[in-house]
Image 1 (cartoon, rainbow, N blue to C red):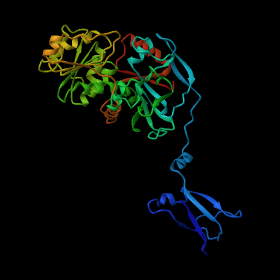
Image 2: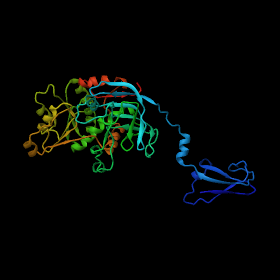
Image 3: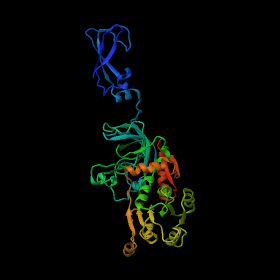
Image 4: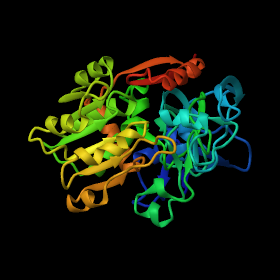
Length: 425
């Protein structure tokens, strides 16, 4: 595409041969044009609108939009080293140390993690008590919220400066039958943040561009971090339960990190949450978050009858979310769920089994199912509830350097709500 300077007494004037379909003010503006001289002898290039006669030709071509952007936008400064919590052997402890900053591959982005939620799954990774091999040494964490600072050459839909998050599902093949049906978490080649690949307990983390959480710029990164696993997981489980607005859902482990989100998502979806947990502190948390009723399993004389009574008509809740990290609740749920109701297993107590009498399960048509993490659409929906101010679960912020003390509290079952680590300290 070219335009040739024509001579006249008034000076240089542009006469273009650009097709009408490609002509635009942006392409023709002086700021958008690069100039090359085709003159037999060196002469000063004339400026657009000059009145001096010239006897040389210019060719003009539009500067690529990406080139213009790169020339005006300063790229983030990425250090060579960063602070991270590293697990060097199963059983722990984690070690706070400096490690190299990773570089993104062609289909990956590098996120400057500002905050990361702490999940019970992270403790399982430390203890090594799941029947799933993990990377070692390992940087844990899979609820990381931050800012994109670098991207691979194949990434076209993520910009430097975008807010983004590292989730449990770091990547999948996107081509297998499960991925094609939006069940990416069931992909045989799935990679898991903080388990099979390094996660978000570091200042800079890698994520596959297709699977990072897209976080709107008006969201608080500190508050949204736990949504990326805890919020997403319980939102997906509530969808899997099939419970409809106006129905009751029992949430076992309601005062913990998952449960505090489950109560709020249940209310936002029009359900009546029945909170089940132990202790007065968790009673307070659950009622403040909107639980319709609270059942303390440590003081209840008949947990089955108490849950049924809380459902209003005495027939039991329409759905049960098992978020507990101990086995016993998984043996009780089938006794109080409503006929035709659904039990959704979410918590992953080590070496545990779920138990239900076959006859009762069949004749009452009780559904028992598992629910893993959500897909990319579930992620967008879970974040949207948060963005609209409907999810405000409690959390406490500590420095990344204090992660081991959070694990110690988890081991003692002394955590109500969620912990978030600030990677800057």
